[in-house]
Image (cartoon, rainbow, N blue to C red; front, side, top):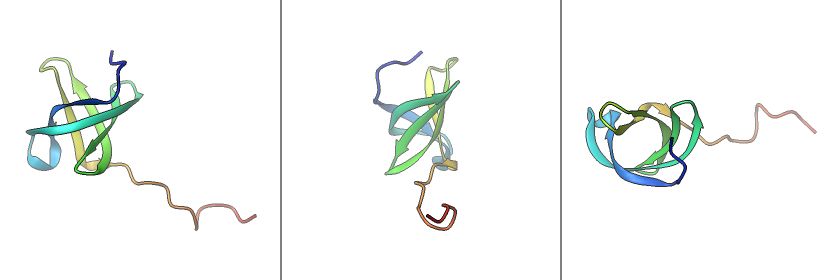
Length: 75
């Protein structure tokens, strides 16, 4: 559906109870699953075609950068 990334526009933000704020969609991760960035936080987002808006889940859908260390095998 979307091919040109990044997409910068007003989106519904979960932590702000659905308020519209400027956010960025960085890339598509899967079927209606997008990587978004809001306030420096990377998180999941979905697109609602009925209202033509993205919904950014910066509350439960936060994506943390992988930290090397404990879970990696010893070499």
